[in-house]
Length: 213
Length: 213
Image 1 (cartoon, rainbow over the protein chains, first blue to last red):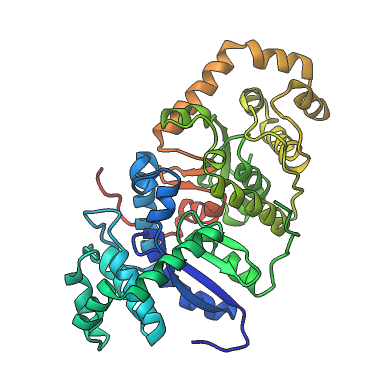
Image 2: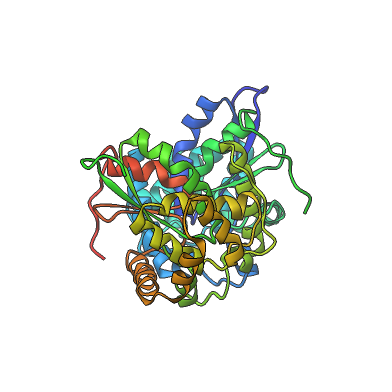
């Protein structure tokens, strides 16, 4: 929740994204150190990738980039002491998890759910596109898994909210994940830019004027 | 030059690359702090991009990525106190500058030349593909600009060396710029990963075992 008087940074994450996993596991400690509040914003990269003509992740489209990413994520998990288990399928279908995270955002369990999904996916190699993988996570949080999964599949309001979030992400200039967006609209892309985003939000960065266009 | 007993990190840079500019301007101070020696390795991204079907920079192919990059580089230059002037043409033809940098590497002026080219290009917005932009840089370094430019255009040995360097970069798994490669073959891509690469080289990183394949 955090203090009401601190700057807010939106953390735009995608459940299918490896670097979103690393960022999600580091963000609390770093936000506390930088004195910023973080708002967790799930969205879908699929429609954004489609719009630029990609049918899958660039890590699959460009093998050298993909090989690098897997080694790099393994290294980062080593560095930050995070479990790492490369899932067989990549990217996974993140639709159901993202809708659940939006339901959880309203009810106060969104962040805990998101972290548990990321650990299941990239720490344990589970298939988080399947309801069978998400149900135990919800149950462990003391929630009614059956009811929530049904809602995530049928509730038109939550479908619309996820669609709107994805459109908002696109309108902010987002083209990958994770991202950090400050209250003055600055976009920082990538797990490795979290520090700079929080510095910016806390007013410690030097702020070159934004150019028109 | 550095001390002979320190770990060596190869700095693979491309003169057309904005993030290579930022990295080139920061690398000396950071290498000194981390106690590593840096070997400057110019190469060309063009052939590597071509091999994956790109005819220009991904920053031109994907407008959202491009808009982000220009704003981000402007911010980074602000943060590090570097001059920034967006050149009219991007990416620029870096062939001649890269060949000169290779000549300079043998003769001890490669790094100073590389930094001056980067400042001319992204600090002053000059067209570094043109010999007219490179000649004053060579002259300022006390060199015979005319003779060196002639050699860069005709010397078959330097052409072959640049071709071999680019092939070596590709064989190392390089797909962008800048990169940092440690003696044990670890690749770190991006200006924002310089710290981690130097930590790794200095043996301070935790080293998860490399997986086969």
